[in-house]
Amino acid sequence: MATIHISDLSASRDLSSLIERVKQGEEIVFKEGDREIAVLHAPMPPRRTIDECIALLPKDSPVIDEEFARDVAAAVEWHREPLDSSRWD
Image (cartoon, rainbow, N blue to C red; front, side, top):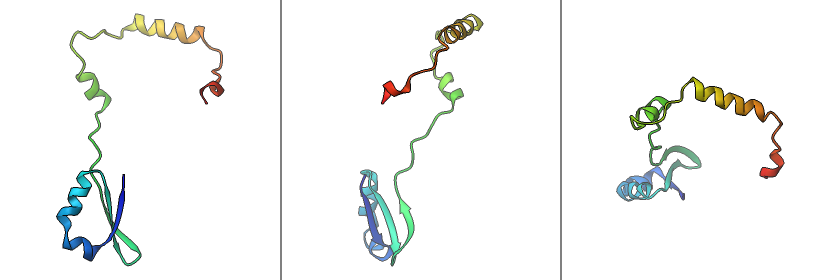
């Protein structure tokens, strides 16, 4: 993502083209002399909560019940050896 540094006076002359550049993913830093006074960028995409994600699951999705939880706990207990993270590097 490109960042454009521009004076507030220059920006005021052609704000519409700067907004178009923001739409393309660029970031605009407005300056007054050497001092940054504002930053214009596209908004972050909305994020869902875990409850919202669960609500989006199909109604016939498998249910994580107590039996499943016991199976997971047993699998974790069975593999208690420490992980060798050096293999991930």
